[in-house]
Length: 340
Image 1 (cartoon, one colour):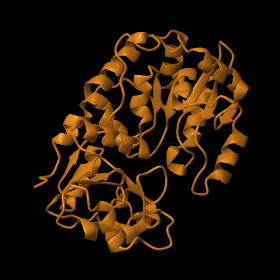
Image 2 (spheres, one colour):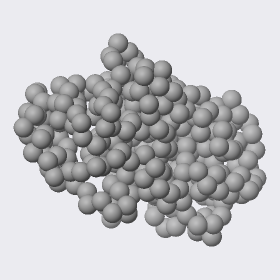
Image 3 (cartoon, rainbow, N blue to C red):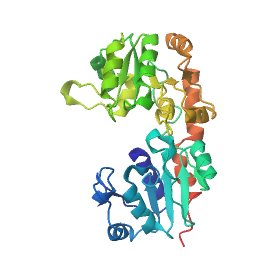
């Protein structure tokens, strides 16, 4: 979510806005500790009012969407009443089992609601809230940039990453660039890697008490597993770009994602994707991506044995046409509220 918020900030600056950020913690312009998820008490109305006083437009990133800090959400909503605001919804309460009984986000005639998928837009509409879908956006390389296949042009850092993973030149690496949670379906990712005879690499940590489940799954698998980012000689850090470059397959086996950025990032990095059955995946697939399902691993195995780069170029073109970061300012401009 922080990555998408940064993209929105840059897009707003391209539209001529001067931006500043307000949050409970982190590298932001104004820190209000009461906005943090784990805050013991919310910020006061006066604190929020002072923080937002110089803003002509306020973009609220998920704070009023999920009730992770409901008291802070109430304060922010009260301060924004009657003021131009964009509520950017990445998740909605009923999409998480623990929040099923919670009401929909607050609404106001001066606000515009933006969802990251059509599923959420329709669910808000059913609850009387009009919203517009603005899909997540991505930096898409030009046609002549990047490796032409899933095996070429990794670069020295990616080769070092593969060596640190224990993967030789002829070995396969399946990267799952997610955290470990029940809805991320680590079991599906492990099964895909085992079917392909690959190293399974889970990039993110276990959260929300999922650690013991992750330990059991890893102990039960027969293939090589790497958790987290490996250490490189000289202490070089492994970034997400390095991870995509080092892998042969991207796995997103999730049962639920609000969007699932690896679905498009796999295309921008020219890597095949094995994807789970989460509802929004079907919505994104309708744009024309050629992905491999968890029940389609024999086809992926054959593709890896003789990669057809036309599939990679096709997916890249779909990403360029529908999810390019270059088009984000225009998509945001189309939903801006009247600032008068």
